[in-house]
Image 1 (cartoon, rainbow, N blue to C red):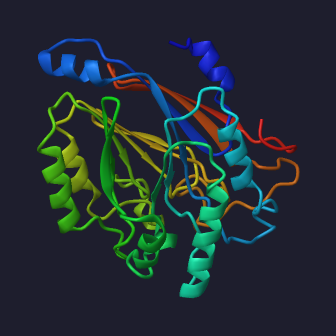
Image 2 (spheres, rainbow, N blue to C red; image 1 turned 45 degrees about the horizontal axis):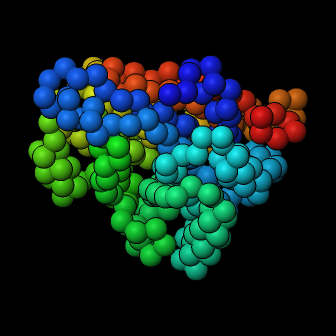
Image 3 (cartoon, rainbow, N blue to C red; image 1 turned 60 degrees about the vertical axis):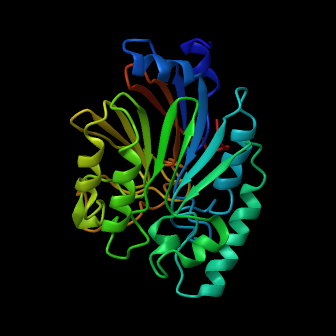
Length: 302
């Protein structure tokens, strides 16, 4: 098992989260089974790449941050078991042909990742205008589950509905999936929008997110990783931890800190300010995460 110092030394990636899951201690028969299945592994989260965005006043390197992050992921000493993109893969457009072109370009760039598995989720920029139809052509289903080395992963779609809701049909699907699990199951949830009301005035919420949280509440070990807000935020709904990811394209201000939600302009004195990278060290036995955030340097990614 790698020690904590070594982990922090090599986890340096722009705009991504790296999560280490360690084995469980046996406390009950159910936990013993979970421990038997659990093994150390890592995955990488990237979010809000907004491929197709052009705006030198916000990010003059709008063609570069995604490719830089991919190179850093590929250079990791410990290779991730999978990579997940938590939404807003592309910049929104009313033109279906342009949307398809951006998604195709995004897939071609991401194909350079050396990870064995790459998973995707839509953001509202990808899916809200056509309820996810174009997104599905390129990336498949908008919500799904999978199990990996003792952890149950759930991807929830809270963007294809243009009202910013999960919807009753998907909530029933979530309820059915959770009904198969024991309360001790280690669960990681991916969403694009926050499930809680971070700042509804800026659309930083999910209209029926509280219903999803209520369904997750009986489970002892749940963590939620999301995007959308383009900044680092950490929140607890009782024992459920929520962690947002910074964007790879443009930073946003703290919720409510300015009258209007809009990207923070590029600061030539502090280039790449607000765009950064994270490492996350996790032990599922305690359902605890140690997070460290790092900046991007003017000369590129550290």
